[in-house]
Length: 242
Image (cartoon, rainbow, N blue to C red):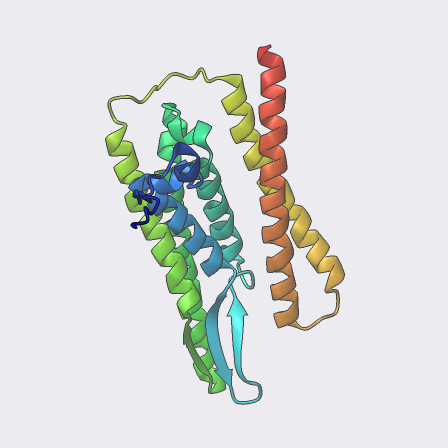
């Protein structure tokens, strides 16, 4: 007497639209993914120490990107702006010239800022010799340079790909304009507010502690401000359109 066993069919798993949709569109496109990575490098590099210094009477210590001329604040804001323009599907798919050119222009501005910062850092390090001190640039600075370089190159590729589709007109959909303007305004206001809050909380503290707290509040408030500004701007633009 034989027994029959139920047949079990094994089939390969085929990802559905729901499972593949978990990956953000910005990460599916190589150019946009590179811009996202460049923005992250800019932000992380900007909140790191840029210079390591040794003095006989203090030993080794780090100088953050937010100290001295605060060039790190500029590059951090640029990183946030590149991330916002690249991550936003509406801004990334727009054919408006200003949005297509934004990553390239911002990358160039970041490189110029870093060139000035490097010159200033070298002058500062040279001045330490009179005190018997010395120092060098830290990996955080070079990470910022790498992010700015990647943003410039990827921005140029993005411009080349869209060269036949660019709209050089001044007109722009109100929803898109509101989102972009709101994000930029919110990021700037958030950055200024974060710096002020950090200064109030660290009044009288050591320089290193002050720099770290300023970085934390400035970046946090900038991201929150950019998100709130973009949401409010897009909502107001939609009201005006309707």
